[in-house]
Image 1 (tube, helix red, strand yellow):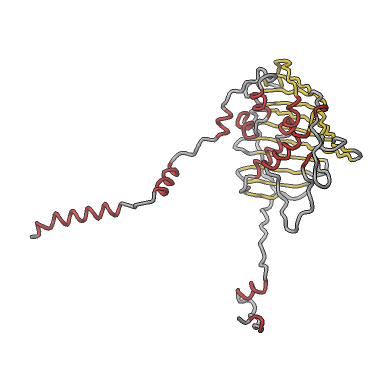
Image 2: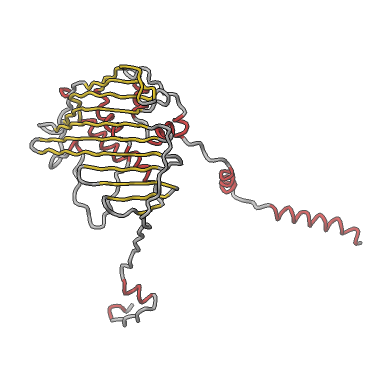
Length: 348
């Protein structure tokens, strides 16, 4: 009898073993685990940086012209590696008796492993210093102390984009009137470059009809910033908002004149130097506003590694705690004070 049941028992044990190994998971869980075991998707910036750029004739090749002049900082870093960048922008805005002048100077050192050092100074006596080392962001404003941040939102990418975008942003405003002429094959330091001369055509007579705005006029159709409600957090303008504002300026702005020079690196297709001055008129009123621009951009020491040190006097990031809206209830809940006696109005 024992010999008869022994094969049956062995079969049951084998079946139980198979069932115990079956996890009967949902399809989405199986796919999620499969994705976790797969290699990360390719970085699109690396793919862009491997492209060969055609800078042979930017006077007629509009696609290549926009591709080179609108290159993002991430791609510039991927193509050049380590380098130093300096830029300066001077603006003069006038509308009737109102005149505003401003400037911004930027010094940027890009090291390896994405480490960088950034200093920006502006005409309103503002100075910002940023250092990124070993995946820690250090920030300092004017004469304040260095503060550390893990940069969870990736703000450093926006900072680098803004710092490197002085020519990129004004190219968008002037590109409708720029005439490109290949002037020479030359050298800039130890880099072989192509030099293009720029001329800005006078297109002020082609101003669009004056738009009609409700209420007071707004600069180029962009409402002026009003008073902020209490508690409103001052935030950085997003790329989407910035593009929207620039697009409105482009719709109403026309170039009035200007000139410049652009040096393009033959090996990487990156712009290494720009000197440019130009005038714009913005036809949003009977008397158009005028904007005068003068800027310079220089990229040097490509491929030269320079170490960036951690600030010695940096302090930890300040975390502000949110206090309870009803402190009495908070104290009662934690047993720190006795509950108040209920009144007739509090009774159910």
